[in-house]
Structures are given as structure tokens and as C-alpha cells.
Image (cartoon, rainbow, N blue to C red):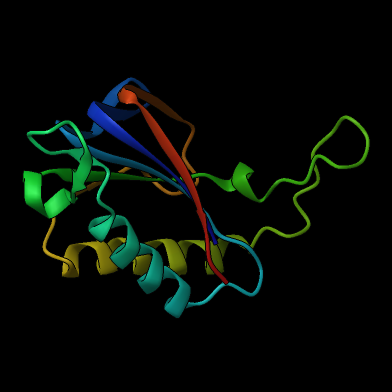
Length: 146
């Protein structure tokens, strides 16, 4: 399971021009689910993301977590994170989880975030989404867990 996380001032996701998820200050998560990923990996990622101290304190140091600042999460499924571009010019998605398993683990991840006590907004699984965000910093991390 791969997650690209970005500290944001704001983020939103739309489907067919209709806004389906929006947050202010917080973390934008793009989540890719691969074959062999587990609920334990989703739980670990959710806990890690909520607890990461990537927000600045009064001294300007990254010392505050999402819960410390009262932030939210916008979680969007991102199938292409499972892409492999090592050979040729066209990505291979052989390692991506089948759609039903990907949705199950994405939903589990979203539930795990909510159980951490933070507000969560989402995109729509398998939809063609338009994502807009203001990356604060910029601050971006890539997390992986099997």
C-alpha cells in the first residue's frame, strides 16, 4: 500500500464538476492499493498519517500532528500509484489490487482514519476525479506499508 501525503492549506475533489470532498488545513492523501496489501497495512498508514508531526509549532519546527492543529484529511484513491514504469514507456499495473479488493482496503483505510478521531472527506472510488489543492510548504511524503 502506498500513500502520497501532502500538507495542505486546502484541498478538494470533484467528480463530473460536482464537489464531493473538501477540507481546509490538513493532509491530502493519495492512496494506492496493491496485491497482497492488508487491513493491518491500512491501519498502520492511518495511524502514521494522523500522528505524523508535519505541522509547524510556534518556533517554526515541524512538531505538531494533525490532531494538534484540528486538521482534516482528504483521502483519494489513486490506482496509478501501483504503476510500474521500469520497462518501456507505458506503465504496467500488474501489481495493482483488483478493483473489489482495492475498494475494500480503501474503505478500511478511510474507516481507520475516522477511528483516529479526525474529520475525513473522500473522493469516489474508480471515478474520474479532479483534485485541487494548495500544498503548504510544499510538504510531501511517500509512505509504503505491506
